[in-house]
Length: 354
Image 1 (cartoon, rainbow, N blue to C red):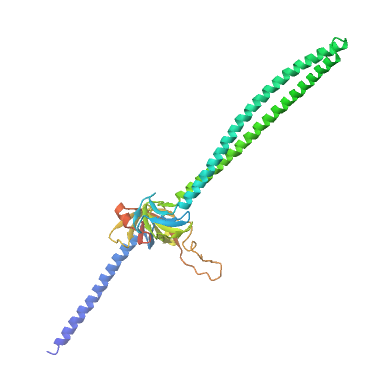
Image 2 (image 1 turned 45 degrees about the horizontal axis):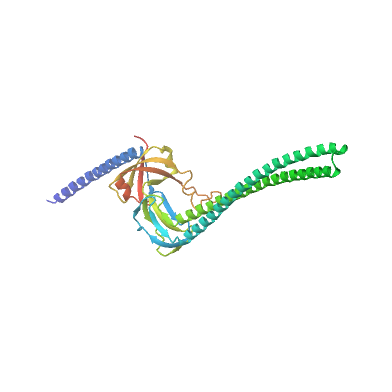
């Protein structure tokens, strides 16, 4: 009976000695299976969880200053491109437009006056030209009479008084002819001057038209519209608030421009190129996989584009693996895209081989 405990202990020892190798074998098999699976996966995939949803964010900035009259939207709601969102008090701008239009009207009246003067001076020119022809005929007649009287006075056929009278008539005709020529020249110069005044008036009208166009443009800026279709965020304006030109009022996230920015290590880029398929897993929706495509690469690393980029020439260089932003276009349903928001964390897996 004394040998029974010894026998049971031996049996237990033998059982334990068999379990340990079995456990080790199972662990080795599991490890091998896991290792092979990981090797096969990473031989055709490049993964990173340093990625997020990005999108085009359009800041809406006031282009003119004024008091806010009305706000026509709620924050975090969808708006469409061209939709009126904020209106400013436009009374000052309407007054400026009226002033510009009044100036344009006055300038247009000046053009009308110049055109009337051109017509009048042109008529004067025609009259002056006709006077030249009339004076020329009278001069011709007076010259003929003078020449005839000059021959008659030599043989005493006429008196000296008659000859002197013919000479005076000739001299008066010559003076009248020269005066008519001078008047015609002056009329031509007056036409040129009036035409120059018309050009100046026309330029003044163009200048005032520019003032009118500018005033209309400034007035249109009091109605602030959505530059794109998307979701309004970062609202920074209230009714009655005085805003200044250049002040940011809110932003619009363009819902049709969502993409992923994945920061891959520089050592992972060897097998990545544009056009490769990508599996995207959004942390907020882990059960929904989204397809994507590698689109392009940033020309600089993330660190180089930071506010204070590292300087490796300072003598205390420590080599750190850099990351390069890669843009990935998304292929998802409209319903899914509406759920995504810029800044959401994602995990991406680039399929390097089919």
